[in-house]
Length: 575
Ligand SMILES: Nc1nc2c(ncn2[C@@H]2O[C@H](COP(=O)(O)OP(=O)(O)OP(=O)(O)O)[C@@H](O)[C@H]2O)c(=O)[nH]1
Ligand SMILES: [Mg+2]
Image (spheres, rainbow, N blue to C red):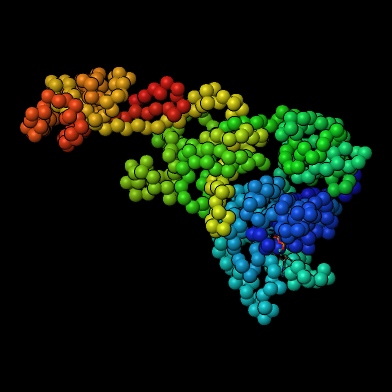
């Protein structure tokens, strides 16, 4: 470890709607700039928007809650882009921060991407500070009352979020806007620094486990090698360690390391470091992960636990495609939702594990208060829809992704029109099980016991004798009835029956009633048959005709069974 005073690092994300003044605020806050801060990229400057994460830092005295003893607190400011199209970068940025600043243009209030950032913050961050920026644009006489009004509004917005009651600070990061001289001093920034200090906490710092680092910049230094800078997400790293760049499948030795311009020999979770390796072309890696060799897995499909994002309009449909951010990568993927089997509905589920021994119920749509699918009609009749405490999804990716175990997953509809003023983030969850085998369909999925409940209805055509009836309209003409032989059915009059075999060529079948038909049922059926044969006089010989003629029969037959979605034999199972 480096000698000298103790320095603690806290990553502070700067998030908010486009043009709210995030970059201006980061600039006002920082005393030391680091690589690629402040829209240094030429494309960024030309367009006046932030295209990538910007890093800068600010050092202050250690606040009392992080004491005792001498030392310094370093805030690494992670300036995120605001433009809607860059939401993937924002999600990546949010996963490395400990404390989030949500920047709001005080003259505009909450805007579409402020809301999306708030959602991301709720998923990925512990703490938040709201910054009302551009207060210089409020007429001086009415400034205070306008700030108070917006503060109240924000408090209301945050009421039902985990950030309820968080500090709200009013500033002007760049009074006068872009044309104002640099000498114009920002307003409220020293107050904001005090608030940040009061909110700072020691993020979890645990040197155990695999080393994993989110790299945000990669560049070469003549005569030294290639430097990758980033935040250590887990584990630790020492000089001489081998680290893998999984996206490129190469392993390199750590030649030297720096933490904010100071050489170090060791760094751990929460630290921001630059790692120098040799013989590696920096052009090959821009953004990405490096890790302990072979500690990440590359997966083609995954099982996740998930929750719908409340602000997402519309239902989450099975088979729909989403943009899926898995850890730090985003790919297209298809989803299939499933819930606990009814028997396990109220059972506590263990966090971060998936139980392959249990049965799960396939769902056409994710069950939520607003999902009024016909599937849930039976549930609905009780009034309120009963929702399970946990639901899951199977994700099938269009391209394999490389990610750590148990990483964060966010599903979004990024193809939604960015001017549509709606939340594009649809669900979030935890990756419970990845499937590394390309042939997971054959090798893995059969282990996943998700079933569909099938319900078929038909009618009793006529009585054969006291212990058997002929049924119809349950199967199609071409159905191989043989595979249904032996399955149990129930008559609407209460009798249990067993499918005995086909009858004729038109999909009719024979049902055996082991306990015999009730006399009432027999009467009911005989009267109905008589009526029918009268009506159909002349054609009575044509069996086929009568099955098309859907005259109402008084007794219905219902067949219920479950079938596992991934069972290659398509077995029908009855309890
Ligand atoms: N009047 C006034 N203008 C400001 C203030 N802060 C920022 N601006 C202006 O608002 C515009 C946007 O500022 P940026 O800091 O680039 O905004 P941003 O949120 O980083 O934008 P993106 O990164 O593209 O989302 C610039 O023209 C700034 O000069 C402020 O406190 N007062
Ligand atoms: Mg910016």
